[in-house]
Structure formats: C-alpha cells, structure tokens
Image (cartoon, rainbow, N blue to C red; front, side, top):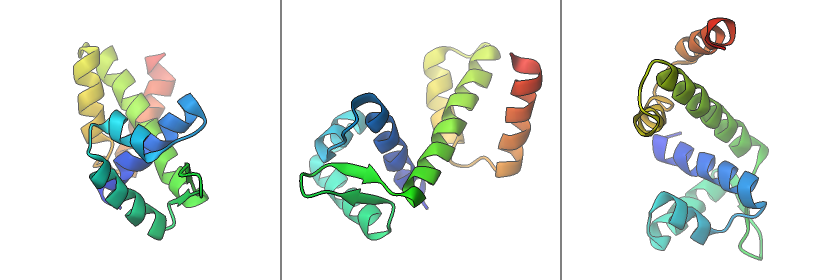
Length: 121
C-alpha cells in the first residue's frame, strides 16, 4: 500500500475513535483535501477491501484496513514521543513522525519501540 492510502486509513481510524462515525466530508476536512480527491480514494480503498461504505455514507475499516491503520497510528504516536523526548518541538515531531511512519522498516521500528519501553519512560 502506498503512503497516501495509509494516511487515509489512519485518518479514518482516528476520526472513528473521536466521533464513532466517519463520512467522506469528515476525511476531506481533516486532511485538507477536496471532496473529489477523497471520493476517489474511498473508491480505491473500498475496492481494495480496506474499508466499507454503508448506504448511509458512513465509512468503516475492514479487519484488513484496521490492521494497517493501527500499525501506522502506533508508529506515529511512538515516533512523535521519541522525537519530543529528544527535544524536537511538538509541531516538528508530529510532522516528521508522519513522514517517517511510512518508510521505517519493521525491524527499526521494533528496536525504537523496545528502547522507548525499556529506557524512555
């Protein structure tokens, strides 16, 4: 999956946690994208089996989509924590974590997570 798809899934996860329901307009507002762009992405994610769109327009993650979204969101939270502990400003840490979360290897992330759990708290 490409970074943009991961970002959509992560956004759907977070919006669902905040509001219980997610609509395409919510995604567009949160991500700052046009409704047309979100509509195209929703179609691709739906046809890929990552989300389902109900008759009421509500969007939900499938098991497959949720697994990816939770993985990316965990990376985001932990990388943001590590960067802020290193003295990076909150805004910069959030922005950088958002970029790093999509390219870091599973091995490197596991090592960072273990280090944080062992020494960072």
